[in-house]
Image 1 (cartoon, rainbow, N blue to C red):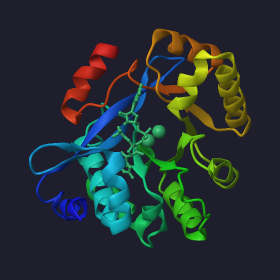
Image 2: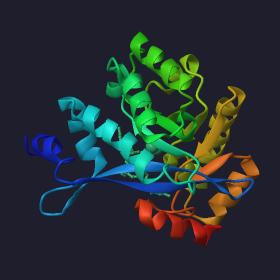
Image 3: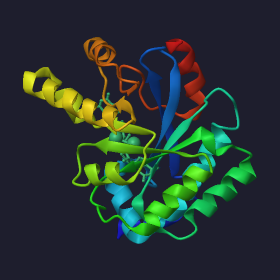
Image 4: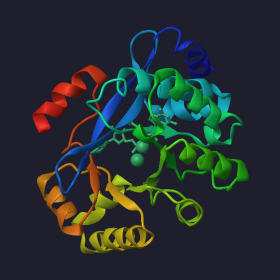
Amino acid sequence: ENLAALLKIAIGQDLVSLVYQPIQNVASGRFEAVEALMRLKMLDGTLVPPSLFIPVAERTGAILELGRWAIRTVCTELLAGDHVRLVSVNVSPIQLKTPGFAASVATILGETGVTGNRLAFEITEGLEMEMHSDILRCISDLKLLGIKIWLDDFGTGFAGLSWLRLIDFDTVKIDRSFLHDCATPNGKAMLQDIIALVRNRGHKILVEGVETDEQMALMREFGIDNVQGFRVGRPAPAESFQAHRAIHK
Ligand code: G
Ligand code: G
Ligand code: MN
Ligand code: NA
């Protein structure tokens, strides 16, 4: 398959890169973190969306090398400096299930001189609903390195509540579809219920997809910890991030 072949050469040919989207603390207005998002170019320069290439990378196993590349790149291009305190990286269940993953992360931290407490790993509830004991062990090894574990896209999959029962997430990211449904009374009540559930379990709450001032005001009213979305900032390359950050100070 075309994409599978492309993924094999992507790192060597410089076809893969990271952009970063800011995450803002609602109470203080400060930038709490940025999320690293992978980008893939075809040889003619066309961008392939992650929704297309990540599943292929998971199926072929290319996600393992791409994932290590992403963590190393975050450490060298962003965490080497002290402008950004915390970076969240999306991690696939395939990576968490692979023996030696936590050890490979420890190696990258050692080689780049970055401490684990400056990384968060985002796990999507997704289709991978079996609670493999290797996944739970890997997560506890990552926590020993100081890495924070976040639950991504909460509310979209089948397994979110099971994950919540088994793993002590630092932060739960509520999928943007809940905020966007919030225009109706029913949608608003739903979002409030989800917030109460997550808060009562002791997790910090990040709401995704904040696009307008009205939504930002609602997040303040709801006492949400952190927000992400076009109202806060769009994904941007590492270089442009410092400038972007200055604008929003
Ligand atoms: O910003 P964007 O549309 O690219 O992100 C879409 C989704 O793609 C993210 O929410 C995330 O689930 C997935 N994604 C982006 N970058 C990565 C990555 O580096 N690793 C994994 N496993 N998934 C990613
Ligand atoms: O990890 P996750 O699947 O949540 O990746 C975030 C995705 O959501 C990225 O593709 C990013 O471009 C997109 N995104 C981020 N902020 C917003 C927003 O405010 N509105 C919309 N519609 N999409 C967003
Ligand atoms: Mn994410
Ligand atoms: Na998400």
